[in-house]
Image 1 (cartoon, rainbow, N blue to C red):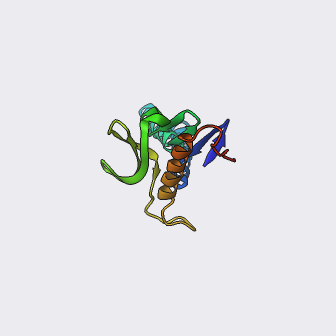
Image 2 (cartoon, helix red, strand yellow; image 1 turned 90 degrees about the horizontal axis):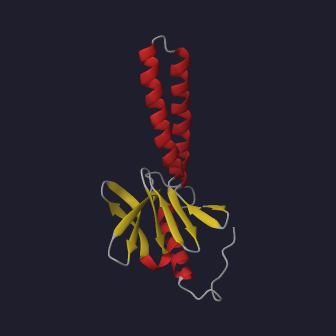
Image 3 (cartoon, rainbow, N blue to C red; image 1 turned 90 degrees about the vertical axis):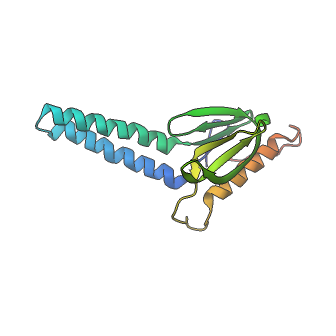
Amino acid sequence: MVRMSGAITYRSTGQAWAGAALTILFGFIALASVIYSPSAGGKGVWTVFGFCICAISIRLALAGVVVDTGGIKVRNLFSQFRLGWEEIERFDIGRSGVLGAVCRIHTRDVRTLRAFGIQESHVAAVGSKHPASELADTLNEELQASRQPSAARPSVEP
């Protein structure tokens, strides 16, 4: 969970760290191919490949759900969208397409959208066996808090 300018970002930390590590790794591969490749063709192929993987890895590291008073903004690997609190029915963790355990957003108009940035890893985190489920529960609490009258709504601390 990261708080920036009144908004809170929820994401799976393992996935964010993996994205950051891949960005660094393939950034070095791209730079090394520019510096050390003896042929112009080799430089071009490895450089383009390295920077493409870097761009995808950055998106992987930044994937998540940004929560503010108006609703949520979901940043997925290749897309992003915004939903107002009034459009959302609930959040849960479950199967969505080829993804095994990802955050699903159930809307009031019976759509099910996914938030790629919150998903269960295959390795249990220290102190929690289901961190993505806990994030979905926290998002449901945020949803319930958004439905309270503004005077009765508790303030969220950083």
